[in-house]
Image 1 (tube, rainbow, N blue to C red):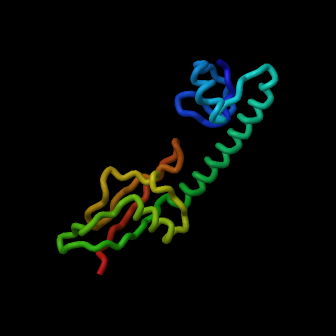
Image 2: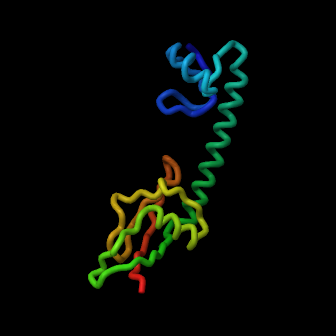
Image 3: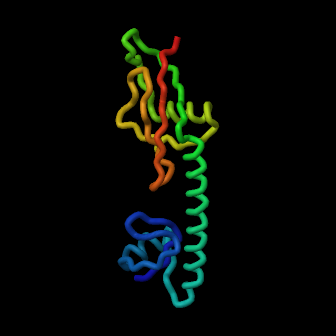
Length: 149
């Protein structure tokens, strides 16, 4: 069954795309949930408008991500944490801690899921952390963990 997607669906298509899906999937899931509309002869213009709106939104998102990347590039975020005499932290520094300190030190809002740590930081010193701002844009920042007194 041919439908026009009203939302982005992983593995199916993006908003405004005309796709062929199984009839049962369309009738039982996509159409009742408002995620798609049947593709009729007159729907082409509406699908094109949806694609243009999607492209404009994507362009704005890319520009916003690039602005954040420019502001974060080369940034050093200082995070105080309790540590022992050997430099090992009593707890750990997580992605949520990094997001909070980025917000307070550089006034940039990040999503916790955009900060990718292999494992939580457990020692003082500088650590390189990757921040994914979009699926094609990644910026490394330096997180300097200092022993709190």
